[in-house]
Image (cartoon, rainbow, N blue to C red; front, side):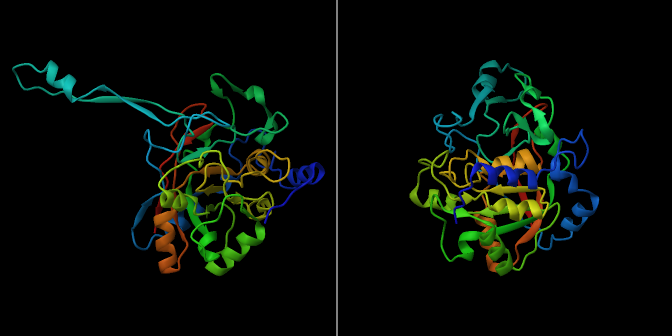
Length: 317
């Protein structure tokens, strides 16, 4: 259900779930502070089958980005700096070692990725009240994605909303609110708590594959989280929320708000967001076995100052 908030209601919601200063004035990782040895050890104990699922889309020139719209992001451009032809051309009479080499030009949020807390601002402030000037042309001085390097692992829980509602996928514009999430969790028999990594499936990637084209997947109308979903995630102190859509939240957005879920979760609560996670294979097996919890391991690239990062999330059951 869509929830249109007026400006005062939206402000009250931000303040209600604001975690600025909760872990000190120097904190840069928000609710990822709740990931520690105990939560990781419990998550490792969920592995029963040893089956590993990659939740990443391929990084190639056929990805979802169009170079247009809100961000202007393009797909990865992958080049060979030295290929097999170069080796053959340089070969001499004597056998010797040689090798290939390659490089990429890449928007760090072009595919399956994490948003850093330095990615989202509201009223010129990001998480923990830090100003826009903390992100310069050299990158983020604070709240960079590298804060997740040793925190992006723990108990993963899949909330398969369309399957729970008896459909293949949710249609674009369908907003997922707290009632939807609570109903899904209850029917799947899972509880969600502090330090968990919650994966919300809308089925949009299944829809893309069924039609055989990305079309407006990147930045176009999409199912996703309602502003009301902040109650579900923030009250449970989750470490992160990941979705299978381009932007996690419902599009078109609710009311006159721009990226309101990013503002509530990231800017105020300090909850990291993952986008374009491919949950299709995992969701099928979870449904078949009636088990929706697993170990998730998803460290970002350790790029100093980055405000986002490609990631290959692994779910291990």
